[in-house]
Amino acid sequence: MIIYTYIKSRSRAGLNRKLRHDVQLMNWLFTKGWDFFAKNQEIRIHRLYSCEIKRGATIPVSTNFIHTVGIVIGNNVVLEENVRIFQNVTLGAAERPSDYSSRSDAMPKVCKNVTLCAGAVIIGGIVVGESCVIAANAIVTKDVPPFSLVTGVNNVRSLIKTEN
Image (cartoon, rainbow, N blue to C red; front, side):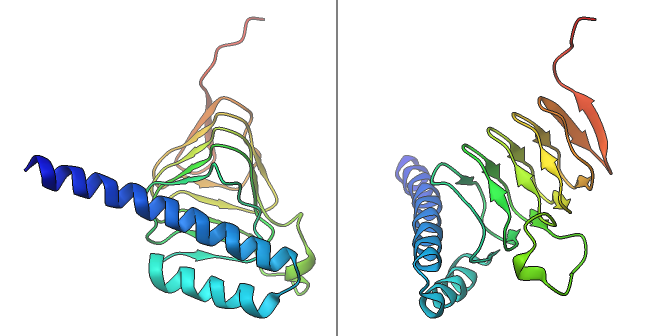
């Protein structure tokens, strides 16, 4: 039983590491202008990890994919350091504009140390502040201040009390 638990935990960590490597390779190919190879890498990520991560997304190495299934990250989404992403998280545009690929203001930006729990949906050109927690199945369409908890639909609660 101990050996099985060890192997299972190591394979989950290995999957996270492999996905991060594949995303970094895809982004490197995209920035070099090798769009054909970047597109092939995007398809490979979709087939191997059951998630859809677009080529133009800015994803640092420190991003932690807890469960890869069902993750959707659109083109021009910006993630900062130490973002934790659980399964079925969607980051994308609220609507599909005609000049979709060139509009970075239509996509969300997620700041440092944010946790995106299972089923969270973050859409539109919004900013999720530093050290926020987006709860399971929350829908975020408005800016979120730093150190906040979001539950339900745009229900923002401050995690840190400020003195007036």
